[in-house]
Image (cartoon, rainbow, N blue to C red; front, side, top):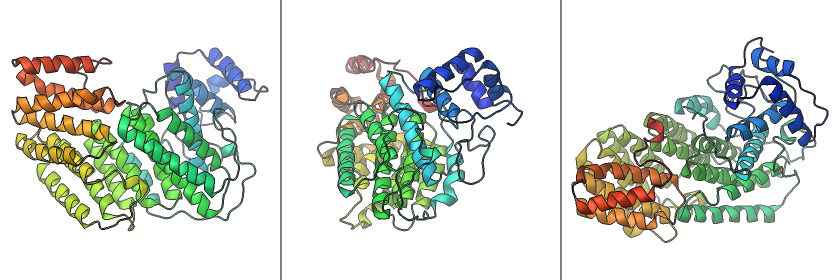
Length: 496
């Protein structure tokens, strides 16, 4: 007990709109449903949690997290409530006051617990038709400061031994819990194959339709990690968790669940590092950086890219470094730093060409020559908002990307069409722009991606200067019909 108001819990309590007595009754009812019928909470205890900073004993924090998750329609964790998680290794942090409320970095046991709790809550929202929203994204500098030193070290290895009882793995959320049990190499191979299936679906159709399946699979893997397997199996299992968490994060970003996406990227970085794959951890953080650029926060993206590059270690392949550079260049373009962007893209090209590795990790398979040109087109197209001359190289790279795209990468091809059309509008070539814009519209219905809508809105804004052209007027009407869920002139999420 701190004797001070738990402001995090107080804020969420205010958003929920309950009375203290109502919350007490809900806690008792939910606890009974989760197998704790003996719990008896009253109004005075709720008041002490909020007004005096008292931390209730298990299972109350988990019960409260489940209640607030359902009420607010977004994942609410124990840390979000301002409580210190029981069983945390090391020095306890007051999550109500620190700039690092999640207490990053996490120990391996806590990573598995957070993974299982977070996915369980996410599945509950999916199952009940709720939409996650409303939480704040952590700043790139906060994540970088918290994780920098930890990410650059390798995890300590423990001997293989099953865990018996561990409060961190005792039914974290009460939902979708996979019972801890040993598994073998065949089961892990099946899980690794499922990752490839989900990854191919995401590249083709976007994240909306398969996100729940990925989160459910990740929830099961979190349960498997509650059992200590032989070291080589445990590393592979952490690798599966990292790959699934990146997919869950990317799919969440694809459908506009931004705070949820960032949490999955952080979980993925932890899982990859525990599996001994620091380059994978860096790639997970680079996804968080791409998310920040998309949301209009390039300064946060650069902080995250610095962390990703420095934390990836010496084993990172030149092609992975090239990908990192393209994201950094996109952030620089968003800030109008044309000279820095061109220099960074030049370094990316040199790294990409120098990569002679035939064997690439599975998570780098999609970053091929087409994707390299696609990212260059996006960077130049973004810079063209500040320097219209950049529209010409943007068109050149977008055309190369379209020529090189393999089948099954429909969403990336759609982005290429939008980049090309946008660059043509900026270059005062409305006829070419109209052609590529209509190609983009033709494939819009085949993907489930809010990101495509955001990019289409940016392109729509560029059509305004050609409002007198009948062909462009028709195009504008078609774009408006393709964006039924929100106004076409909606501001970028990061600028709202």
